[in-house]
View 1 (tube, rainbow, N blue to C red):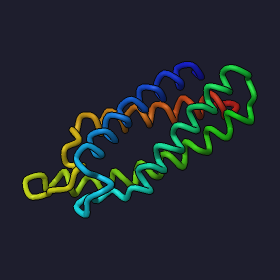
View 2 (view 1 turned 180 degrees about the horizontal axis):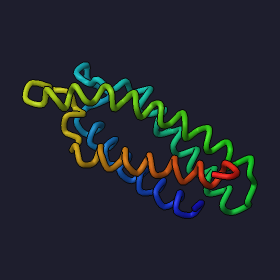
View 3 (view 1 turned 180 degrees about the vertical axis):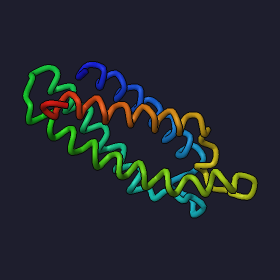
Length: 132
């Protein structure tokens, strides 16, 4: 399960990088129209990258402390992700009138990223929590 968690985490990260790239290319952190605060978006990225590195180190060395820290970070990552989703939904719904840069992010990518993130969290919990 731990390797499956790594695979889903990497796929989730790829979707996240795509969404971040779209947002930045449309002026996301530099425009007033964006509903996504730059510290939240970049904090989500930083925590996700840190957690992924810790998960890789856990797989390489088998240190359970690394796995537990990665799980804790994953919970924070998910909370920031839900915060961004809550701010993205109104932009998506008002697509015709919104000028926010995140409206260019395809709904399929957002949904795929979210589903992979949930799968990652479940697989990490199964891998880390005894008896799951």
